[in-house]
Image (cartoon, rainbow, N blue to C red; front, top):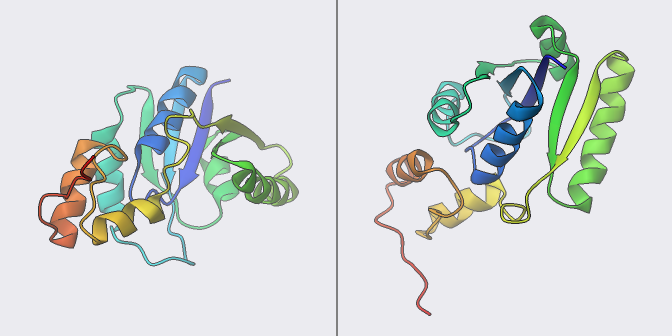
Length: 166
């Protein structure tokens, strides 16, 4: 397998996304992280900012990061890939992703979807939860790459995060 595409909004990229990216990069000669505009959500970061954060967060050398407006299958076709990579954290994720995969197959029968299970150490991380914690001054440093943590604090004008007392 040569090229695969890992699409998402990545608003922001989390350690869970990085885990999937780095593992998928070991399976393919080239992995394109496709930064989509999710029209059902309002984004905290622009597409250009998300692309920059991803590039600064991922170490694998065979990973490219590109903006991907429109349908994912159209982007995959243009990129020359034949595989879409999706990360699965839970059964709920699987149900949603399965429906998306079936619809993608109807639109583009030659494109396959590969599901990668999230490592259990990052399966609880979700971008929307990260943003909510950060908006309320919580510590997200264990959930996101350091560059993302700093950018979240800057964007949300948060003081240094409060850590829970034990």
